[in-house]
Image 1: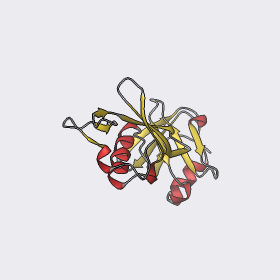
Image 2: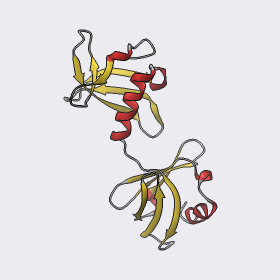
Image 3: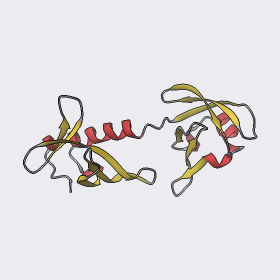
Image 4: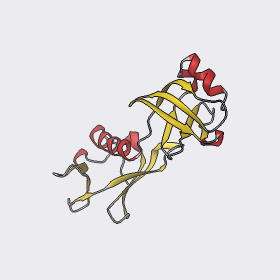
Length: 160
């Protein structure tokens, strides 16, 4: 189990840029962090697994780790769980599905095709966060509906 007592050098990168964890003998083992509850608790219950899928270490709370370890794991998790954030909904081709949405994300403008209203999932206790899956199974997120511009909220309201 890794927690605040984790030495910062226990987690790092090897010469190939792979995230590694040093075992009790100090041997660096390439690992991949895997969050158990990606949607409901993304910063808790994280396993560090090796190439064979065996758990090498467990992190009950990511925020409890020293900054260097936490940042390395956060970077690796972000690469593994690539989910663009929708910041603006510019236009929707139709209020019936399937419809093509023109959106702005934190990675630039794009279009997505919403096959069904069921492809929009509310997250969290308040339901203000959304996960949207397009026809190609690419996922997008809206962390807080209230932070969208008013025009974007109006377009979105037709679907939720």
